[in-house]
Image 1 (cartoon, rainbow over the protein chains, first blue to last red):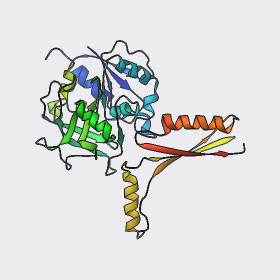
Image 2 (image 1 turned 90 degrees about the vertical axis):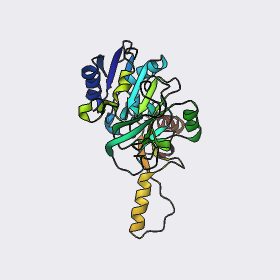
Image 3 (image 1 turned 60 degrees about the horizontal axis):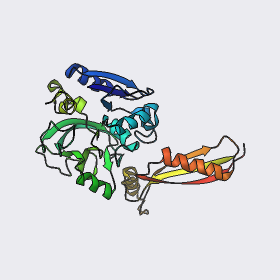
Image 4 (image 1 turned 120 degrees about the vertical axis):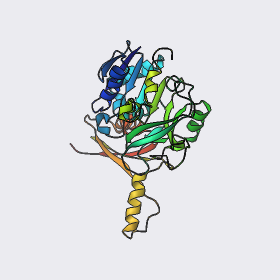
Length: 228
Length: 85
């Protein structure tokens, strides 16, 4: 299993993701420069958090046209596994690999805090090591994380069991008070129809070592290793 | 030469928190005159080459669809103006 972490100008969580894969999980991982065009050797690709291209125009809007993204689209179409975290999620919706949009937080403030997430489904590769309904603690750090989609898209996401994570309180109740950004249905993470592309606003790579407060995010990366 | 003046705004029903904050600020200044406020982005695209208005419009529409707006949440309008070099 070979992992790749894409580096755009302005990515700033690329090293965190690389660190978790290399040092915590001891797996095979390489950086992918945004001008690279060959992704044949990778099984799982991570679009990390940050402020690619300065978030100019809209978060993720410019990164989606960088050379590597054409290859990423084909990689996803071939069934390769793709994880977009924070800015990576924003890039995936701008590129049309995931439905909907991420608009500025409803309160117009950058939010950097721990949140609780409810694992809504385990019927995909990424969340298969969690229990359905399990409550996770992970940090968020974003200004545009307010998930929006039209009604038919929301219905599709529900009917196809594609809402993976929802913001919730410490006991797993999905409430308005636990929603940090105004996201519809408290959506924090979704998968595409083929369930090989995950986008999420919270940072699992910053919640991968107990010493740093939580290792609740580690299972997402572990889900690709061995047979556990 | 042609210039396209593009305005991108949110579609109806999409939360525009910036507009809401501005509206509240205006109310607190005593301006209770407004029903609704929208924000948007303005772009001026000045074309390099001499071309017909139709050709310029096709390109302007293409870049609006592709990059300047996100059709999931935004709409755009543009007007063409003729400018001297």
